[in-house]
Length: 192
Image (cartoon, rainbow, N blue to C red; front, side, top):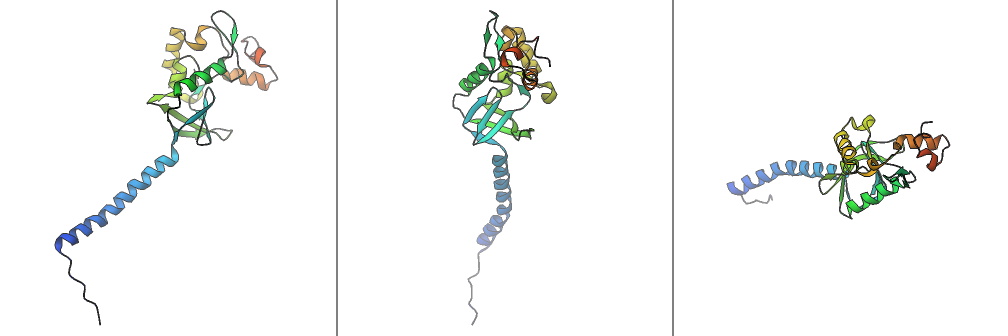
């Protein structure tokens, strides 16, 4: 014998129909938000060097800039050498101050690192580093995005702009050619 089901009221039928239409919308929102979270890195960052962070175990190279290497030396306004690469890393760490970092991947570099734009409290870390003379705009990749910040650092004499320095990409080329950090940090020797 067939069981007889009570008839649903028009209100209940309308509510069920509305709920059924909401499910695809809610699933779409859930999928999009999980995709965004899976592709962005948000969290505590460890500063590896002036242009490299680590978030949730992933190495992230800051897009569009190049900071001096950890062993790189620059000359201050007094002509004395100082570790400008270490200064960039230390100042970046102080600026982040254990606040959450939000990184949006742009690409992957030849070393397998994620290349991303990252921000803290709404401030673009690449721009902050360049504006404070701790890194350079790398036009080969940035297409000049940080050029105005670099001009501002130069005019204001901040960071590396207080004295002299070798572009980080030239320093690395000199090291690869067998140079030492001291002689590769000297502009006369940095061009292999």
